[in-house]
Image 1 (cartoon, one colour):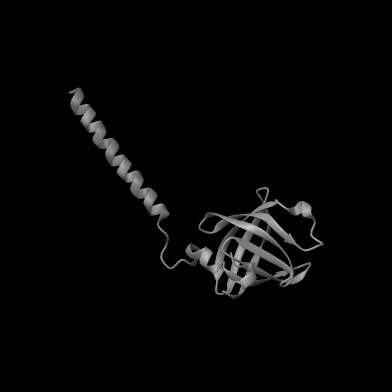
Image 2 (tube, rainbow, N blue to C red):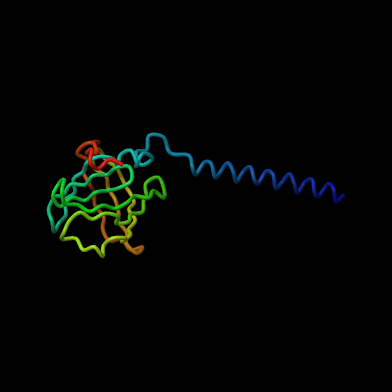
Length: 151
């Protein structure tokens, strides 16, 4: 009788494990034709952003960095990108090439999440210290990464 109970218990556990594994695979399966599944591909190239206080600015997203230009191509600062989910990445200020940006900004961290992609516009939310500090969109100008900023 005990052997039968152990066998039934083992079968029930096995069925549960298969069910859990199938559900886990389903949650990881990307939705077909959803552009958010290709965030990394969409987020490569040259973009334009309109800051309310500074006007328009050029951004370049390479494989591992995003460059923010005050004057393209000479004055900029960069954040290193660390992807943590298909459309979410952590950023760390890792390069400053602009005399008006204080060096104490090196190492500052943020997280950005792409919330939507519509045509050439990529909508995002930016978080610093787990607080949303900005939401908006950037406009893709082209998929080219200038030679000096490829990595």
